[in-house]
Length: 488
Image (tube, rainbow, N blue to C red):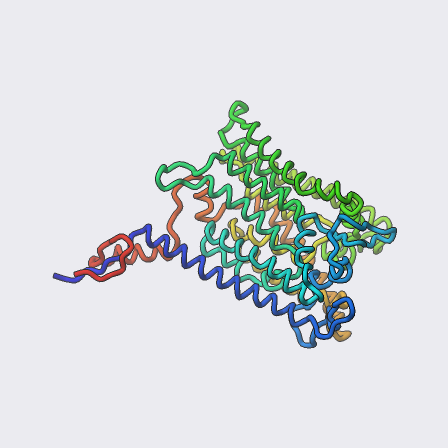
């Protein structure tokens, strides 16, 4: 009697591929995050001045390719972190627009993470290490969520250059996690329970939990708060078409949960130190679209209005918010059109389009914002050529912008070409973001995320399909549970 080789069943194969995806993507994250930390670590101390500032910062050692500059180390002495002052409670903003007394220019939860990183630190280098210990887990958690929702596409996050360049450039990883976690909560709620065959949670329940996460994200870096709008519309229209089917109560719960979360995180600081809390808002309001902003305003409108003139600054202050509102309205409208065509409001796609609008028209476009949009490349079907162009331009910008700003070692000829590179890559980002606004709104969701959100059975992963196809072609194969033993 010929021997038969037992092969694992589909359930075991799916589980095995899931474990493999998680393992490899988390290992890739460990490599990119460690690389990013090393690139910043070599730029600090010794020696240090009396305040703990590294003597070689921000230029760092000669020959470094990845820029040494990071806001983590820069703010050590410029925001009172070396004095371990509790942010917002004391201090404010002076007539020249300079913050003092421990105030930082970020929303309150980011400020608290910054303050936690400063505790026990006595130099900018130790502050970097403390902050890295706080930030790194958010990178791994984001990877795990993306791997569960999109399988191998998570590698686009875990192994991409932005994680090397920006993990410890600023405090972006926590806010990215909140936006991805909000999607994950809704996804978990809509996915089918293996025993009942029904969604695990009511849509209202999962959407309210997601709204809480988005509210937390708002108090970290603002932009996740935008996503509450499409999420509320999704809940509003989830029961079908027609006015009678609209779930106004569910949409109100979503909006209310986000508002209450924001209030709960903001009010304590408003009460304890209103002047310090408001100073952070005033600082951002006064910020100009200058050479540090890398966007359409500085590299476009400024030339049309004869440089950095009062007319230019007024045009930016008025045009930026108006265009953001118009772009967000366009994204919501495209979502309504898809609702009429498909019967489901594409809240995730609309959220991505709204983010692209925000990044395109906001007067500040820092390189590390690439971390914000990167998870949407993972979750939505976007042409790989466009992703590649955007990420290549992003790397070129980051390697050039700090030479352009005089924060890296460079010869005169390097400064000349860096101006050209920063301008060119800024325009590449502008064009790509404009395309993303429409492309995101029309995109499909990647599998298995799409099936989870649609409350249908998720398709098998590529390795599982290959294993099952191989078993089907082998007449000597006999399917067993999860056994890999040989039988006769």
